[in-house]
Image (cartoon, rainbow, N blue to C red; front, side, top):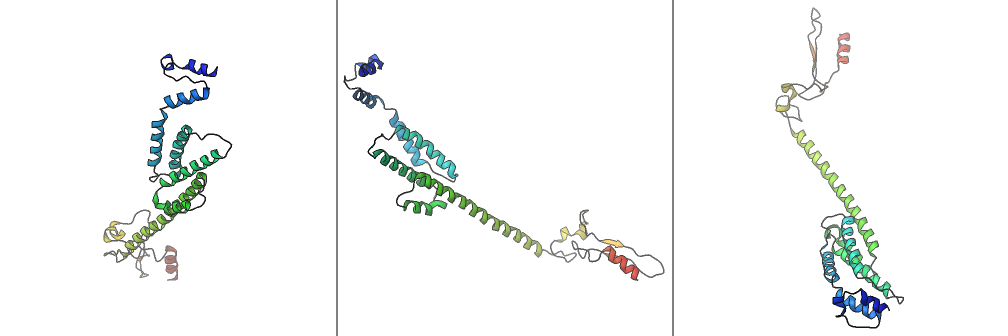
Length: 237
């Protein structure tokens, strides 16, 4: 009865071209082998994508995600037959090793080359999940190393700039750290400059004391004497 039901589901134009068989399994395999041709080109395309999928500087999670999408579709078409003889487990293990090789082949050599060799020399070969974990850890180490290399470079740039500023010397006031074009004695002190020169005039009269000036030593120096010190000196005098 099962054979008849299969025949009845086939279109009339195709039914006459199908060989008559008595076993349903044989009929099904015959139909599958004859008409299931759409998977062939797609399987070839997926395998080609696997060979061409490279990291190219991407994060590991993105690179691995692309591979996993292809693996899921490909192995859904190429299912491992179920059995109790241990063959299924053997085939699944072989597929896992294929994934490891495909994953490692797509990684960038810079940063992962030595780790690539260490994994391949391991016997037995680690699972794809274990390899993914190891590679992800290596990615974290590379990021930390890159940050540590950037910080000293920035420090060196700052030190170089500071050194260049110290080499400058003003021809007007003779102080270092600026040029004549930026000398406050010429262009004037900005409002925010706390050490602007301050003039304190002494009392004019018969005491014979002239005016006393306290202020910056140069165009951008600091005051050497505060107002309180001046007042104390005047009282002493």
